[in-house]
Length: 120
Length: 120
Image 1 (spheres, rainbow over the protein chains, first blue to last red):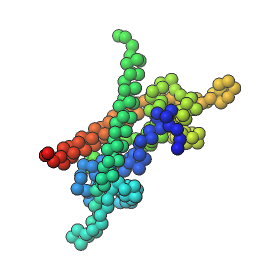
Image 2: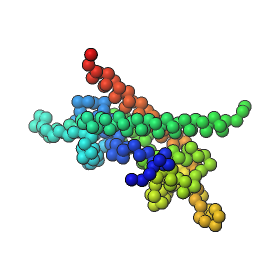
Image 3: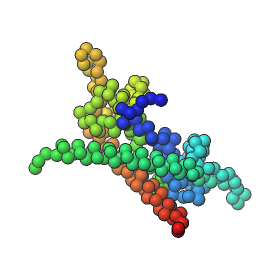
Image 4: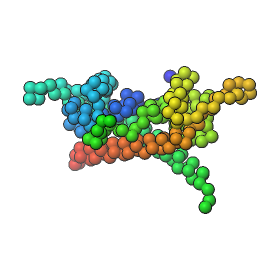
């Protein structure tokens, strides 16, 4: 393992599985819907194509972050997805890391703005 | 353009060029160092290999977000990178979007926790 003690911007805790933009949207949708969401609803909420959503769902499922249930509704195939307990835990951990990054970057940006400000 | 008015989790404003984990690290390093950083320092701060850093720098440079200066220091090639004005502006915009996502997701997670809490 690489020594990252001197690499404050390597963002070790920022899980790439969750960080990818479309998957971040899927995870955020699912944390707001603890009972799960139908594939078709998730598609609309995240503005993804069938193919893209399927691909990202597979990645999240393989990582154990979501559960996928395939069934039937009115004789039509009906797929629903929900966060697993691990998924919820990992997502909250990811949000903590992200919050720290945003806070630090904003603080730096604000301090630079204050330094650059010239007296009137 | 796709209609995303009903797609709250499409995160339209989340620029993929900046969002990628390694590039997010590079942009965060550079906003803390307004005078720019040497390639070798950036490599250490972000824990990236030469090849990876070069690749990500090219993406950021092509998007007009960073400036790259190639020169010599003590007769050795010396490359430095710094945010452009556009890069700083775009990064601050990106941070705003990210902050909103984190706040909303955290608020949802907290409200669920409160709802699930059973009386003692």
